[in-house]
Each structure stands twice: as C-alpha cells, then as structure tokens.
Amino acid sequence: MGQRPLTTERATERRQQLLQAALEIFAENDYDDVSVDEIAESAGVSHGLIFQYFGTKKELYVATVEPLIEEFRARIAPDRSLPPPERLRTSLRAYAETISAHPRGYRFLMTSGIGFKEAREKVDAARLSAVGRIAPQMGLDPARPEVRAGLLGWIAYLDAAMLAWLDTGEPEVEVLVELIASALRGTGEAIAAASG
Image (cartoon, rainbow, N blue to C red):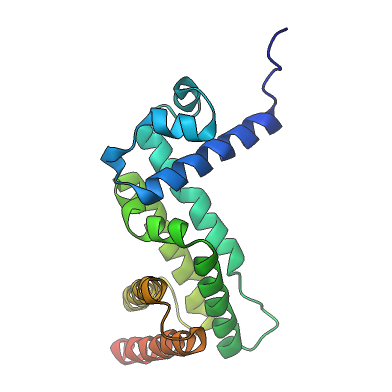
C-alpha cells in the first residue's frame, strides 16, 4: 500500500516536528557538533526529509529562530486595558514566565541562535519591531535615532538581565521586573535629555 499524500496540514505538522527536534538538539550543542542524521533520528524521520523541507543544515538552523521569536512575542502581548506602567510590568512578568517555561529556547535564541547573519537579522528585526511598539506608548517617535538607539540599548539590557536571572533564579521575579521597568524609565529620561 502506498504512502498517504502529504497534505498541507500534514506538511505543516511535519515541519513543526522537524523544527522542534532541531531546536532541542541545537539548544544543547554547538552547531558544528550537530549532524542532520542526529536531528532526523530524534524526529524519527530520514535525513532526506530534512533536506526536502529545509535544503541544508544551515537553513534548518536559521528556520528554528523565527518560531521562537513569534512564540515569545505572542506570549508577552501587552494588555491595552491596563495603565502603561502596569502594562509594562505585566508584559515583563509574562516574559519571565515564558522564559522560565522555555529556558533552552530562550537561551538558544539569545546566544547561539544568532550565529548566522540570517538568524541575527531575524532577531534584529524583532527588536526593531519592539521599538516600534514601545516608543509610541512612551510618547516617543521610533524613527528618531536617539529613540531607536536608546530603546535598542534597553532591549539588550532586558535580554542580558533575563539571561542572568535564568542562570541563577535570582533576584525574585518582582524585583527583576522593577529593575527592568526602572531601567526603561531611565532610558526614557536619557532619550528626552538627548532630544533636548
């Protein structure tokens, strides 16, 4: 009996299965130490199927970045019904919760996940998108160079703080949230001073 045809739905499910297997392996190993055969075995497929879906190991590696970005973005969408300070705190708490639920994915995204130019470009685009969302809530124009530079610097601080917290589990989440929120207020003040 022949194999069932690969429907769009089945193809999407298979692609997700391959991405998940790849992420788990890439998150724990250096890129050069991972083989396509290892990923295929983990996913329970032939290595030829990986090439069919992604072309090369590098393309598979880069493809693991975008779903991670989208998942983190979806989980921290701000609640527009809250006043801005509480909206920020709520989003930061959700970010910390998401990171603690997906530590390997976050660590991969922030460290080895950006090992290739194509992956860095996706992360950079996500950060610029965040600037575009945050700036208007602060009454700032995201197109201004000092706004873009200041908020990108704050996002780098946010990610470094989250990685440090993930490594040690300290400080407590509420303290972490206040530190990061205070840093954003300070960034806003610095941007206002630079805008003169």
